Structures are given as C-alpha cells and as structure tokens.
Image 1 (spheres, rainbow, N blue to C red):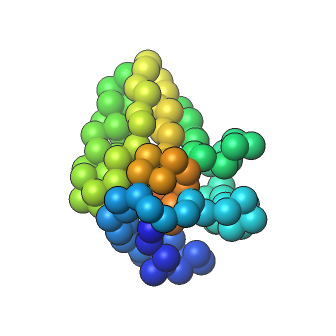
Image 2: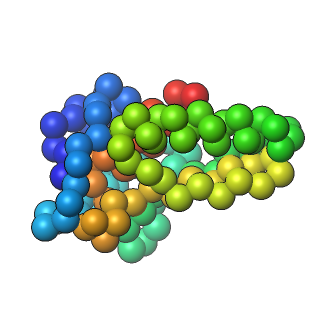
Image 3: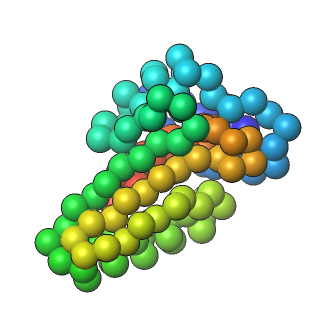
Length: 114
C-alpha cells in the first residue's frame, strides 16, 4: 500500500503496486483523507470512495471518461466507471486488500484536476 504520499498534496503522489497482504486504510485516516478531495463520498463500510460528475451531453461525459482512463493507466490503478448520458460515476477501491489504500485518494485527486 502506498504510504509515500503527502496527504496535503495528493495529486502530486503516484500510485504504488498493491498485491494484497496489507491492511486497508482505517476509518479515521479515511475520514481525514476524504476531506482533501471534496465532492467524493465515503460510505459507512469505508471500502471505497465515489463521485459523480455531471456533463451537458454524452460526448463530454465520454471525453472525460477517456481522460480518466489515461490517468488510471498511467498510474496502474483502475477505477470502476459508469458512463451514461450527461454523467460519469467513479468508484475507487483497492480490490487486492478489499478496502481503501492511498492509491484511491491519489487517483481521485488526479481525476479532480481534469
């Protein structure tokens, strides 16, 4: 799990490979980190974070989705993406540890810069 990141500058971090065997971020840490990425939500089970982005048409939503894909591929950390007319839902979690890692917050911050 990536712990070499600055929680005050998440977008400057880079995702690190996570193969499992590590503990997910605890609830207190997740609640602190979610404050650094406004508009993302943290469900009660703290296993993921989610944000919905709104657009005026399908093309804008698709263009955004493609930009997210490029960032995700560059970082080696891939979100669940739901594309529909005028909106894109993004869910981030680290499946290898069945919870959240620093990678999820780093990728969310990078997505927010699009």
